[in-house]
Length: 377
Image 1 (cartoon, one colour):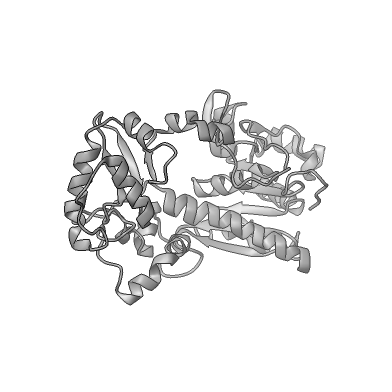
Image 2 (image 1 turned 90 degrees about the vertical axis):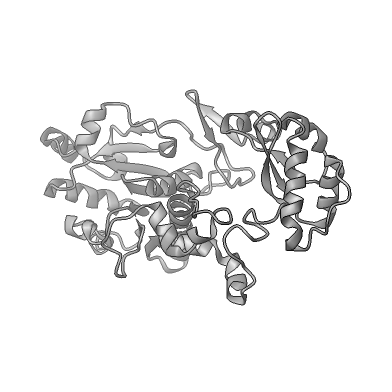
């Protein structure tokens, strides 16, 4: 791993990403966004069906791809050779699958002791549920976090698959890779990372565990930050749109009340008054359109903001000024985050096929033989 002045922070880091569902590609995208050379390894038959154009997925931006038959001895041997020249492998199979294929951590670290082997699963590599199937909603349910999400008196509401797949899974795996790269600078040896979505989802709720332990966190939808409090919620406007309100602190609340033109409100610090306050705020916000409320609260600290669609968010002046979104081949997508000042721009181009594996240490004759046999696509 090498880096020169002015290069991207992960410049020189080579990542082999075994194709799989969302969390693995997301972790690979996070690394590619900051300069890593990511080679995604698809199934050979999938590449042949797709042809020269890889799937147009935002999470594959900046990557190169090949197809490799890992059920053949030649394909496994080729993957091991690629791993010899890699810094990181991202693997997304159920526990035991990679070992049965011959590309598990022990197999690959035998040829490259500096290799960092990142394993991404829902349940982790051990435990009673490890070999079973699952999805984001189940992992978040098992973490306890899903029980906290939703309105009072209603069933738990999963926040699409952001908590398990992406925040608890892919982002944690990328973080684990960075930890392992940092440690390798001291030890010269790689690590195996066991990134489980159930673990990551639980960790994301760390802030609330003391309140739960102390008994100060009430049932779902009755607390300050889970739509229980009228000062932290969304409200419908006259045009059927919505605004988000986060006037938690007293001075922010005062600005909110002034902007709404309300007087004679009961004490907001007494939860017994929250239903009455919510009614007053609901009625007030329905009196004007979303755009009108945006104008009323512009430049204030009332913490009121229109709930924007993704397309609207891309056009908002603040996001435009920061370059929070961009378009690549007409596809709207979020820019890399976080930002490292003075780093060069990320490669956001769609994934492309890697036509020459010599740069990854595979001899030209071996590559030609694999292509002729259909092992490499």
